[in-house]
Image 1 (cartoon, each protein chain N blue to C red):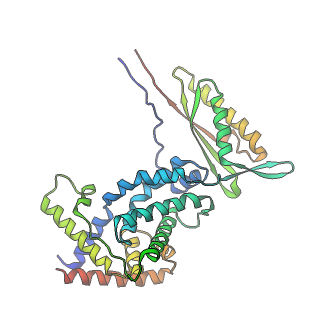
Image 2 (image 1 turned 135 degrees about the vertical axis):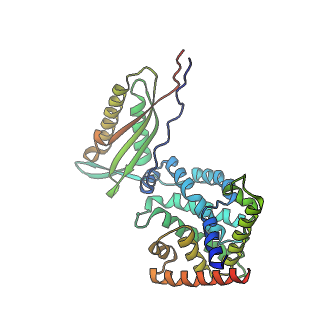
Image 3 (image 1 turned 90 degrees about the vertical axis):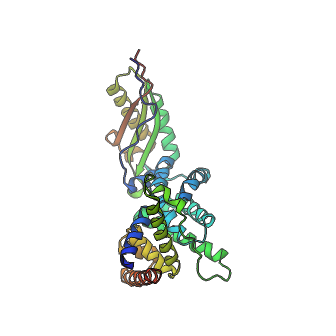
Length: 144
Length: 198
């Protein structure tokens, strides 16, 4: 086997290789990042007097409260994405829904609640109900 | 019959890096965790070959992701996330060299420990084959150690991490033409070194 063949083979091995020490530092790395302070990202809102910014943490907290107020639903995770000029583009709400609830009704109520909350928070720059996705997860189903 | 529903939401299908970035910018730590899981092994592999030991590599990778977490709100997306992370890692490695190099002019690299091969080798594989693969990787690491840092970085980023010439150029802050030259010299040196060790 030539040195060029050796190099090609060793390159392939290195490409598929994960250093064993990586797994040891992964958890510590995530803990450090979780503890690290970072200013909250801005989300642009609009008012008759002009544009303003709301901290993303505040947006998420308000949406979570709005979802939790819907009977039978609990927000597991609220994901917001902004685009150009910090305008909110999409909201994904991952929901835990009590077994036995009418899922379509719960999802519709959640979308409406989130849409209302966004309108109150961001004014005309709210992306509206069309940008809200409700992912439902039914938990703890016990069938005797 | 008794059935139990899932207690946790199923993970989303593969999400693009730019979506993960936008979510992480909004403070979603789950998205950031996914970024770490997705790019951590490659960053570690790269940093490990720029730095002298596991401790320095650990510091470098941790500082890289910490810097990324803090800087994400200012990340404009001009480059791919992966390219940006490699750039941060290279800067961190350079900073560590400046802090700890003393009168050393070239980083000391450790050959691959055969123990590291547990992640990629088939556990039922032939021990002789495992040993041969460990030897090959060890030889490659030693040969890489002999290269100047820019050649080594260019070669790893292109041949191992499969970045484009433009992306490698962005990490090294040089033009794609310069990257091509660095790669040619790196490849020639590696072949010559490996041939001498046959």
